[in-house]
Length: 429
Image (cartoon, rainbow, N blue to C red; front, side):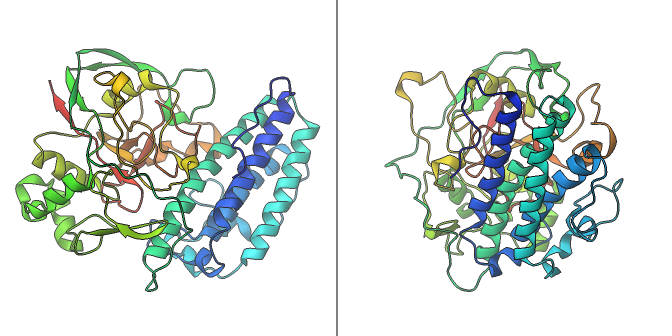
């Protein structure tokens, strides 16, 4: 896979950004390559999008917010693409309904690839002509981080497309995560009551929803040393967890009954197999459970005599464990892996903080104190979604290495399950 970004000591800034732009854009095509044309136009549920749409939307982002705003006299490649590939920027114009993106047979995949090539060339030409334009560089950097988000979505959405297929197929013959002979014993690590500095400072890239940095008071609490496993979740199922209303949030109990949930998404009915990007595989009872909603995570935590961590509790601990290294996309496994004990750090570090699964937090997605969205249409990127959604932290097995950090805030609706979403337990001290 192309390198995420160049590693050069004395290269001019504009050239470094151009090389990073080419690497990120190439990586998206690399991830789409194992999929057949037919795979790339399908949409199996309202939450997902076709691969073809991800390829076009990430390209439209650069055309709309870089070329149309920073290149005098620029004319869009095709005016019709704005409605097709606009996601949710109402201040820009109308868009095709999200749930109906799979109905779009045009533009063709070949036309989308041509669109990407043309926008790549125009963006690189603009950057070469204005290598010291800091505002241009900031928008391009935002666009690259946006594209990395869609690289992850491309894989998670493709997984659901292939999982829904009546024929047993796989994204590719990915290397299976290593299996262990046992589960790392579950321990809870004490964190004393204290003020914590939360959020990103003014140095380096961060999304607007990560700022400003501020203080939050944390009561004494305990965090689990690892993620909750398939084996533990299967025990929750077999003990009647899905038929015990006292464990569930009210909306969760309603959702479970209405949708007929009785196991995580991508599990077989006999609870012995799970669908992965490498196809169907025997369930690894020591690996982290994934594809569970907030409702399921909270019910499991209640059953286990615990709770979910707040995002401030999670971030405060994760900040001591940077840089982010773990089972991220670059391992090639593309699936959560069982925790491996670290003898030298036993009792000191939490396992699986980075990668494997996004960890549900007991925190509503809301603005930080003194939050200010980006100016203009880019202000629609994060702020307007701060309602009815919940925070997840830590990245997953399909998150690009280098993309996630301690302050990174992702968010989903409480019923969402198609992402690699999992559980870390917490308790009050």
